[in-house]
Length: 146
Image (cartoon, rainbow, N blue to C red):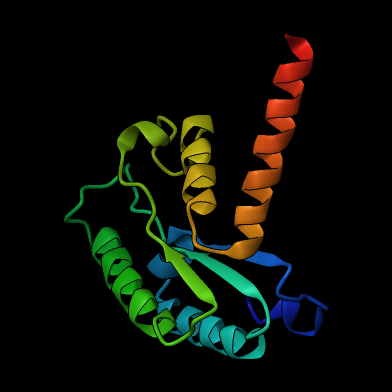
C-alpha cells in the first residue's frame, strides 16, 4: 500500500480490511513510511474493522540478520502505533518454519490456514457472525448427509 488506496472506498463496520505486508518493504528502509501510511489509513477508516498482520521474519535468513532485526523493530513499532486505535486488531505472524515454503519467503497452504484461524479468532463481531453462519451451514449440511 503505497498510499491509502482504500481511503475513498465505501467500507463500513460490516466490512473487514486485512492488511498484510512483507519483508521487502522493511528491508528497503521503508518501514517509517509504512507506519506513517498505516496510521493515516487507520485515522480515515475509524468506521471499518481493520486487521493488520505483523511482518513475518525471513526464514531463509538467520534470526540475528539485519533484515530480521529490522522486522522485529518494525513489528514492535506497529503494535505500539496501532494500540491507539480501537478498530484495529494486530495479528502476530507465525514464526513456525513449517508454515513457510522451502525458500522461506512465502507461506504455503498450512501457513495460510494458520492465518485464517488467527483471523477467525479476532474479536470482531463481523468475523464472529461469519463463524456462526459457517458453523450453522456446516451443521445443516452434516444433518442432511446423515
